[in-house]
Amino acid sequence: MKVIGITGYAGSGKSTIAKILKNLGYYIIDLDEVGHLLLKDKKIIERLVDLFGKNILKNNQINRNSLAQIVFSSNEKLELLNSLLHPKIKQYVINEINNSQEDIIFIDGALIEKIGLDEICDYIILIDSPEDLRLKRLINYRGLSYEKAKNILNSQKDLSFTYDFKIINDGSLERIKKDLVRIINDF
Image (cartoon, rainbow, N blue to C red; front, top):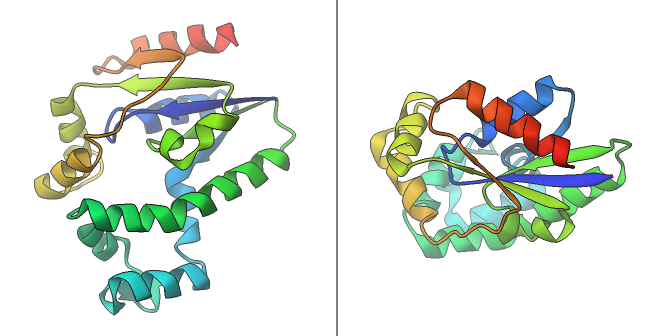
């Protein structure tokens, strides 16, 4: 079994690459989806309320927008959230991999290294895009406000990526598909 990480800044096109891979029949573990799933866990909800207050709740569930407003406005608070969630995300992903019969599993996420999942990846593919294009994508495709998109990009300024392959995603879907197929053939 091979484990391949797909990483890059928010808005770089990781989700586009993951969709292409999914359409090709590959198994994808989306770290954002894992994080959203974990935010429904009662113990995690209780801990987050202790850390960030009851304002993050809506109908006794975590309101991700409220939580995001708090954590993306402060590196300290973001680190606090990450210190709680990252170990749980890592364990969840390891369990998924251990229980899988797939030959190749792709992990899609900006924080693969920060979470420590780079340790289990055979290869890492970096998806890279100019910052102005990433900002535009976050606003246009994810429906984020300019301020929220900018806060997310600023929160990732200190990220650095170690990778084996790099795909430049400057808007040409055909080119990134070709680059991706070429890379997969190298596995």
